[in-house]
Length: 416
Image (cartoon, rainbow, N blue to C red; front, side):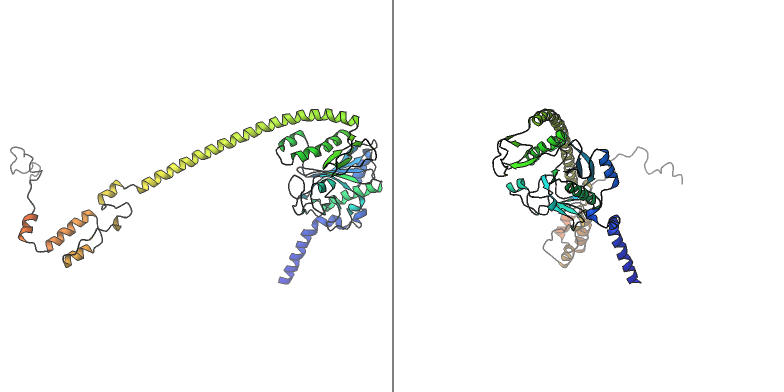
């Protein structure tokens, strides 16, 4: 019976682990699996060919991977987006092997980087480190967009998602695209987001990425990305058509196309104004948050001070002698240890004295009768009797004058 239970439990666990893959188990050829009909119809409605060029954008903070596709007029439009299942690290670029950071930057994906036999269902290598990363001494390998929803520096999707993403890339390559660009950003590079992260150590790096982001927003065409002077440059046309861009060398004389330069200048002017307003808003919010923190700290300090004073009063009350205790305690006694006070013993004069001195200490009111009893049991000399004999004193009651005429008469109420 126990063996049967074990087998049943194992089957249930296997079902739980593989249940999310049931829909994919029926895919006979995942590499050639066609794009869903709903996406194909959407592309046709937007004047997109199934094999038209693509571009992808990744936003870490929003957790989104977007797929863009070229339309008949040459501009790109977003076909769909996917929620990233997992990405590791935090916003900011990857620096070295093992830091578990997902890359940020611009990466070219060539057909050779597609992996139909991935251990993570399907995948493609992002090409990290690219020439920009290498020029800054950054290291790492096998940074992927893949399935299996498991990440250690990669961008991980579900198997269902990566099946479609892989299909988009496959069709674009078959349509003649040499490579497609994956632009990986920390967040959508809006004035509000940039203002929020303006104090980051990566801010200058993000400002550089934003140029390509902005130019894509303006033109809806993937920017031509090059690296020179250890920086990304976008849509630069060299004066010498044969000039080459080298990551570790100075940029060749080049310029941005005039129409793009004019549009970008106007766009950037409006963006800067929005950024200044966002910074002012962020500053007010930061000032308000700082003021709230200050008030909270002051309130906590006052509460701590009041608690300290309360404890001090409690300790003082515990250590101060009680007036009631003083009536019954020997000198030096404190509340709670009255019975523990011992009376200092005098040298023993007799067996009776020794017996008395070895008794436990009593209160002053109890000690007096005991000493009187001891003295009564000891024969006294004539001198002692003379010196110790009590002297009669008049009773206070007797000093009061008796009412006249009373004599020895009984009170009037004692008629018997």
